[in-house]
Length: 337
Image 1: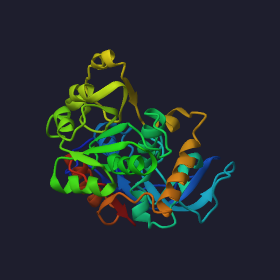
Image 2: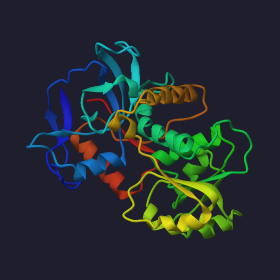
Image 3: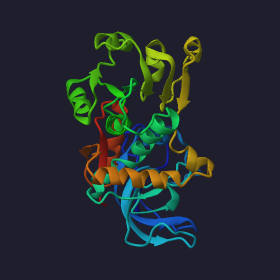
Image 4: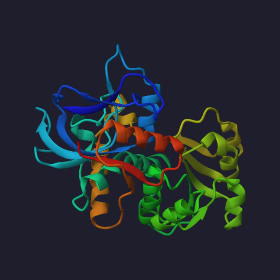
């Protein structure tokens, strides 16, 4: 099968950073699906793994954690899907990624693809949807009943992949006032279009920006990017007994700033369930199915930002370089081999 892989850790613009290769077709295990990959999207995790994970003994490392495609075969102990089903998923960090024509994945972390989306539109969503959903409902423990609430949610980096779906989930499924941050006119317009009640500029001090729109403090914060840079401002902005959730990798933050408010800090890492084989692994299957229903009924929409063409090394290198620039708006997708 065709695949894209790396053999050494190189800058994204290096011609050998990602290479087109031929690889053996994978064989599904008992709980696996064999999926013909039709479209993929690129996430910051792809960039981090390409830059930092050392390939073993000169072997190619295939990455990519977002895919939409068709089930071609199923393992002996599967029960959720059959050949011909259209599926979408993010996959597992401790298994080969989906930048390949064929891919094997545990059926318990796979969902039925939204009927109303094409493969590219669907591939933009799984990893970020799982991340945003778990952050909002499992980590911040927000109620998904859309009842009027005195609470407020600040989403730092609201125009990126996770932010673009988190803003929609919070606006459509909760009663929170949603405040997104974005620093450029086009990304601010994108965030407003996704449903944010307010948009502020994260290139300015966040506490002052919140004061400007009439919010002294907020009850919930989703810190999606540059948390070490913003953390002192976040600690100032969080309300007493509020909750902060983060997804990035800050070098160092002073959590003592939260003590006087009894504010809590939560990590969201959507690969935790598959990485550790948790008993509730199937929750991600159920989550993706619920998200598909919300897309098909018009509650949520795809966050596809740019289509980079066919799935090949050249286009993937270009996508990785753009993700590294920090200027992404929505998601980058590639489609077809």
